[in-house]
Image 1 (cartoon, rainbow, N blue to C red):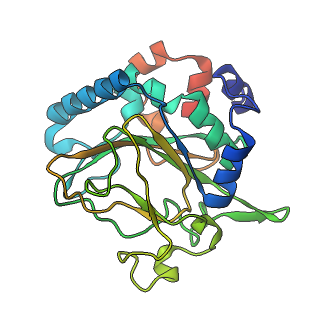
Image 2: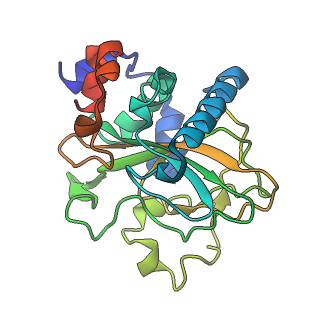
Length: 261
């Protein structure tokens, strides 16, 4: 099965995204999608993440990355069928397919919870304009992007709890924040905060400048990061090496194609 057939099988159609939603991705570099998850689904995901954090302890997140001041988990596509509703969601797959010209696979599904007093990140891209593999290419007069990401809000994102900031349209700048700013940790004059209710998803071109802010609340700010790349690129998580027999037993052929296994 090829990726076009797989996406169709999973519910992706030409009109899954409206013209306005496609324009937001093209021009602004991001798209908010409210209400993708119900409150019950959000709570179930939060509960499972807490269980995994308790089970994995100091090893949590090691498959990809650990970060001071945050609770991280990785390789979630292999850790519970509950996460299938995230990486195989047709609306989000349609957004990824729009940015990546229909040529995609899951690169990673991770969790990040910024703890109180922590979470500040410099503005960054999830690829790099200086990378031989991940830099956008000019093709037929338009940029061909290789990576796209999404933030799944499992807490309300507010100015107080470390909501992600991003710079609209910055995917078109053609440089990384470290080249375009004297100090990428400083505020950018055009940045906005990604604010929304738990259950919202923000899809963003991975070359849109973004970064976490400080969590000034007394609770962790929880989110999932569901990241896709083109099929010929190396995934952030080695899905094939970490693919579990129980995952193989439960998922469809179309889902296997999206996982790249």
